[in-house]
Length: 511
Image (cartoon, rainbow, N blue to C red):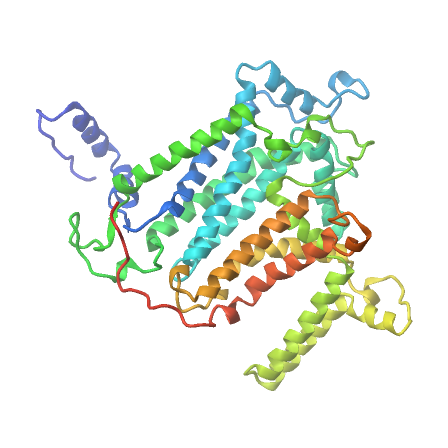
């Protein structure tokens, strides 16, 4: 056991209390010094670096408000009072929270606004990582944990969206769960396992409630802790993309600390507190004055009790899922044929241009042919010859609906491989060729377009016969191809052009 640290009898009361705790719980104080007071972050952080702490703040808001909501919520899809046609007990419990529980409306609106706020700050946090190369060596594991947090957050938000058991809760979950039915061989059994019954009902609601309240939050908290620990082990990135640990040593706080680093506390905790203050002003303005945000944060159809006999005119997910939903809708037979052509051309180029031995070339070609077959390319070729094949996957490949699931899931899974896709000599966007900024800008624009398309009805985007060709699905198809092309072609385009000279030290202007 470590020896007790003595303190002067004339020391202030606060110092005495701190000394008392440190002698009895030294590990907590050691971790505080490691991750706060003696964690040296680059001194050139800008406004993009506040979103990580804001994400942690929103996580706390969601956990605390969720605890209070669970006190009054009942996960029961049965009709209230057993009366046929009455709203479900789950829906009625949400209404009870909103109308009868003191402050319940405030807690519920904080939770619903927090869900959208979580995705806003996480999207901005991830985009900052893209801008400054925060996923590059040695921070690959930091990025992987972050991508896992994003995937876990999507699952948590989807399950929470089901709990009010309104019209969009029921039908949105119906659409997503039915997607699993499209998976070959195991799909029907998997969908049945997720629903817990042959139709959406009480078993489904209880399953999702359990995962939303217990299982997924535990995983999410574990991933957040792992993300922070991995970050503090390798050190934070900065807008210049320079490793301050490799630079000169020694500053006013420690002779062994990086010269270009400053203690996270108090320098960046002050910055973060200011960012938290601005964020909370906007957050509570939304909570008090516009919690639905025009139906984007809380959809109006979800204020209607779930009715399996009445299908809403337009079923669309909440705004933070709409980009991936657009990719799902864009995956039609046309999309699968384009993918088949891309796979075949890529395989041929890999064989002709790659440096591989003979066996590897044949393996690549064989895999490409199998993919083209499963994508329905063979069916299309026979169709050109006027031959109609029997409707079985052995001859026509897998259904486009299945490939839509693959595309939607692949759009998220692809993020895990980003550290190995980007091969630019310069880490930060500041020193990359100028046209790289246009690539990142186009990526943001197309992603925003996909989000907007996911909210809109399928079909022509403009009225008039001459604009019938401009449909939601075709524009989404272009956006989907750009999204995947941005990442999958990154090993090629990220190396093009001549980067600007990267300085040896971080650039910093005091303010």
